Image 1: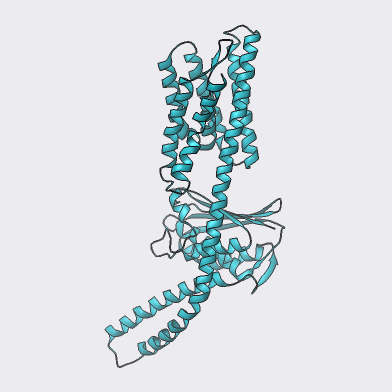
Image 2 (image 1 turned 90 degrees about the horizontal axis):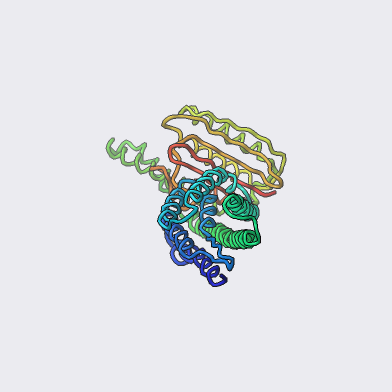
Amino acid sequence: MFQTLLLNFLFLLIPFLAYFIFFENGNLYYRKPILNITIAIIMILCMTVPIHLESGFIFDLRYIPFIIVSLYWGYKYTLLHYIVLNTYRIIIGGEGVIQSLLFSTIILVVVSMCSNKFKSLDSRYRISFATMFSFFSVCFYLATLIFQMPFNREFWILSINAITTHVVLTTILMLLIERIISNMKAREVLIQSDRLQVISELSASVAHEIRNPLTITSGFLQLLSHSESISLKDKDYVEYSLQELKRAEKIVGDFLTFSKPLCENMVDSDLKEETEYAKNILIPYANMYNVNLHVSFHNSLHKAFDKNQMQQCFINLYKNGIEAMKDNGGTLTVDIAEQKKNIIIKIKDQGTGMTNEEISFLGKPYYSTKKEGTGLGMLMVYSTIHKVKGMIKVESEKGKGTVFTIMIPV
């Protein structure tokens, strides 16, 4: 029994091995499809090599990966495993085929309903939730066996072994999964921090040197545009040059924002004035695209920050939300509230939305979902929030809009 149990545990570790080999530092585009296939194979292996007890009873661990995947990914990805599990169970044959079909259906429905709640929990609560769900699912399965087998010593041996194995292995796997998720988030924060540091140093050393010749060139071109000695066609060329110089000056200005320390316009505020300022600035722009701006404020916590940078941060976020709805209009909802010792800012639009791949590129220099965008506006947002030790979470779906959730500790 112990050797078979160890072999099944090794089966359950295969997805972790696949992750560390193929996905930890590589392209994550094919992560879910490949892991889905891997987990389906694991369930087949667990059913092929079940655990035999001395009493003659057998049980397997196919429901451990089934439950965990259902909790993390929902029914869309679990449906494949449901089909594989029951198809292979029919192929194996024997008693309990109908029971397995009914039980797996109940698990699929119940766990999928709990998926969103599960994902909203903190790491330690997710571990407890999955472990308890595994415990109750095994108990429920064993309860259905009472009508098929005598309630004797062998039944209790089966129950103790099945429950203990499922609970212990689920806990171990959940600890590994949450550790991987924690490491991924920590790595993303570190990469973003290093990226912003490089941009800050680069902008501080280069932007001033670029701005001076741009200003001088712009001045001479403005003088030249008023000259009567050049043709109208040449004046058009001068006007195009001035427009491009203005665009270059704006980019340089954005770069200069990154190099500014948090000490020039420091205030201790609850963010009410800054959010209202951004709203008042952008109301005409919102009206132009039939967008309603709705701001709700329920915060009493204060935080020290650079007022100008925070105002520009809100302006960039509001402006992006408005532009995402410029085709069909809609409502930009801004909610500022407090949660324990954190200020929570949620900015929700009803715009075009983004894919997961587009979300992963947000905050990188010169990446923008807009054709005319430079990406420096979002980089400035990430830089400002990083300076106040905050975090940004983006949730989006194509055609349904985007939600920016910013958490600022106080």
